[in-house]
Figure 1 (cartoon, rainbow, N blue to C red):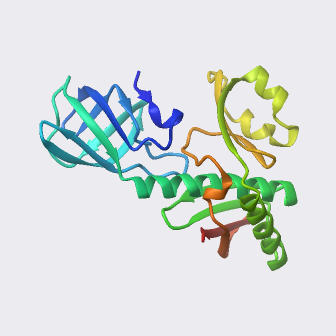
Figure 2 (spheres, helix red, strand yellow):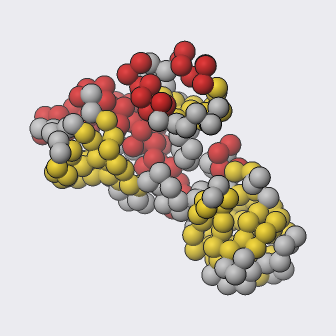
Length: 236
């Protein structure tokens, strides 16, 4: 099974590893620092280097539980030692916006009991759909104020793995629904916790402290029907 190094260290920019399988336009490796698109977070991009050559990675996808790196160029043979290198600015932006999504979602859940119904992360903005939620301008200002307070407080973002029994003891009842969506086959659960604000199951990449986020600016809201509102925001 491929070792997903990005789950242990989201800040690692380069990695030496070996090709274990290959196809017409992709490779599978022993380890990877590349996040495969999913859960609203886009694919990482970057390059692999081998035998004096550098080949772009154009997308990374998890297919049938296997992470495939799709290349724009020569496919290295099985057994080849390669060096992976992330397009770091893109990855770091995704890390910040993913953590920001968790924080916004926690604030909206706490203040208005609305849950996330959809999301998407970009390099320069992010969006979250909430239901049931029809915010006023005053509501948006409250969300902004509480988010920026969490940033200024420099709250630690903890990432750890636990089992279901422990999870049921430490997760507040109002947040338990997020964890109940996980298949019963998953016994080890990766937790992302923004201290004093949020605790969530998540397999994405995140920053270490809220001070890295910068303040939030809500750009606009959109009515998505069925008591659903989309919030689009950027970090400034």
